[in-house]
Image (cartoon, rainbow, N blue to C red; front, side, top):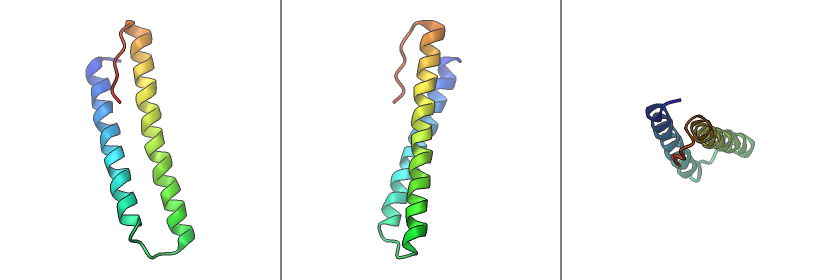
Length: 73
């Protein structure tokens, strides 16, 4: 895994975070079915955490391959 790929992943993770916060803001104004809103909140939260874990895994793989620590979070 090269550094460019890791930093590309960092951009995707940042975009995911931005989308998460944007959706949370819009949901604060939502007046829909509470169960559906709760399910949506959990889904976007899990997707955001998945992106965080992907970043951590990429950092770990890079360190294992090169011995150099790269922080993308």
